[in-house]
Length: 280
Image (cartoon, rainbow, N blue to C red; front, top):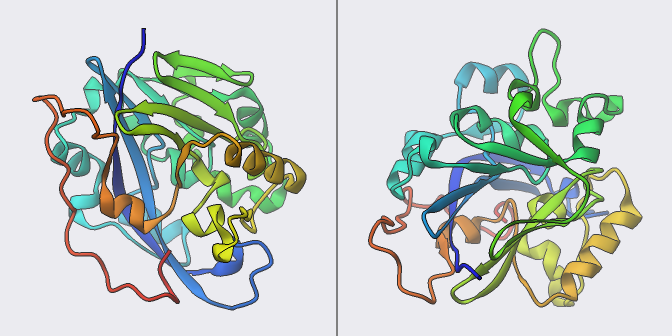
């Protein structure tokens, strides 16, 4: 038995003024980039699955922990963004975190009925990362990091796993020890939600060469290259974790007719002006 999934890419805010070298290995341009925070909502056969839950929307948390410009418009708050596509948090029965950096798991608590799936290697590293990676996991003095607020609902995996018909976990180590992707069978092809193994489409096809490029943030660069090479050989369609074109399009997998209970995907509002220098 197979299922055909429909995927909504939902924007949950935007970080601005980030160095390009963080996203493109050995980038020397000194560009500053803006990136969206992205949550993917998958639906098929009466099930609703969320992949990654974005960063915080609380202004005090943002100001306390993030020195760069990070904005969440009212329509980008998770509850509002989900409502716009006809989803209630209580209806989500599974959350997959591609990894446990703060910008991928800060809203897990909004899904009270969901089991949360992560790699065991990721969880093990998150509780005791090297000092340079503490902030990435949201570890700050006096605060409980996002990933530690819902550990009682975690199912830890050791490698690949089948979650449901047409939905599978793919290990993608490199950016972090337990990074993982989600392979999704949809109406118009097979997609892979990559997390930060592929931050943007520029990482997937660097400078038009057809070759992938790791980001400048990693725990294991050879593993990162191996994960990218594996993905390139699959023929799957990548859905990167931080690409504006993905959230702008919004819905994927619509080769088959949408069910009547799925609200149409709508833009959150007018996009910020695009330039080749500051948006990816």
